[in-house]
Structure formats: C-alpha cells, structure tokens
Length: 218
Image (tube, rainbow, N blue to C red; front, side, top):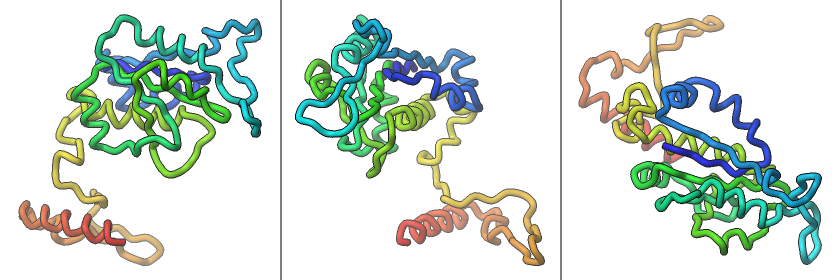
C-alpha cells in the first residue's frame, strides 16, 4: 500500500511513522509513504507558495499550481489512484470509508492544506474526494493525514501482527481489562468484571455488546 502525501511540512510525520506498527510495516515494505512538498514545485525564487486571498480576508492561501504539480508528480502514470483533499467542509471520514478505500486502492494521495486553505481550482483539475475527520478546524492537514494513513493501513492484511486485532471484525468492548484481576489504589480495590473471568464466550460477547450499547446511549 502506497500513500503519497502533499504537504508543506513532511517532517511533521516523522515521529508517528517512526514508531510501533506503522514503522514495522514500512521497514517490512508492506507500507510506503512518500512526501511531495509544493515548495519544490514553486516558480518563486524563495519557494513561496502562498498569496493573499481574492475578495479580502485574513491570512494567506496556498497557490494552485505548485499543489497541482505536486499531485501530478505523485500520480505519475498510475491508472487507479484515490485522491483525498482534506477540508473541514468535506465528507465525514469513517471506518467504513477506510475499509472501502483499503479494498479498492493501493495508491492513495492525501492533500494537506495550510494557512487559510488551498486555491479551490485544484479540485477542478483532479477527480478527488473532499474529506473531513471531524466537526472542528485544525491549523493544517498533517494530523488528519496521519489519522487517515493509520486508519486505512490497518485494514490491510499484514500491517497488524494479527488481522483479528481489527476490532470492527469481532465483538469488542470499548473497555478492556488485563491482569491483575484485582489491584488496590488509595485503599480502594478495583476488580475485573466477573463475566470476563467466566470462560463463557457467548455470555461474554453479549456483555460486550450490551456495554457498547450503554456507552453509545450516554
């Protein structure tokens, strides 16, 4: 699986991709993440890619052409590529979105905006899906891109050590417990729910489902 990230700040990804499961997947060549900086495609001698917005307003807007050239480089001659344009006004990204994308595409381009956004004409040049990770605004698209890479990558066999670890493929509670069975903190004892110690798998699954329903009602 190949991710192509369009970003002004590729170094922002280093700490997350350099740890744990994603790091191992990259080292094992099951996952590849490449970066394309629009500054490298700027015709400005200072490699600036931002300009004031037409119509007035605060801040700066990323220019279309450097981003278009970066996407073109990432796309290359690939026939089947999914391009994700990150935007607070986009369609809500879900686990179903991640699963469908993982099944359908092996090359995914993620476009990260900064400042007041990217010149909207970029969306007219390429067929892309405008995506949001939630009802809030961040300073840039790098964090959402990391979340999307993680969410999609884990859907591919071989990325997780055990494919059964994918919670959505099994009955899983939002709450998890492990040893010891009882521990004490500030003179109070904390116990594992008795049902989880019963060995009765059907009842345990029913308990997990009910626990999830109760959580969702809150």
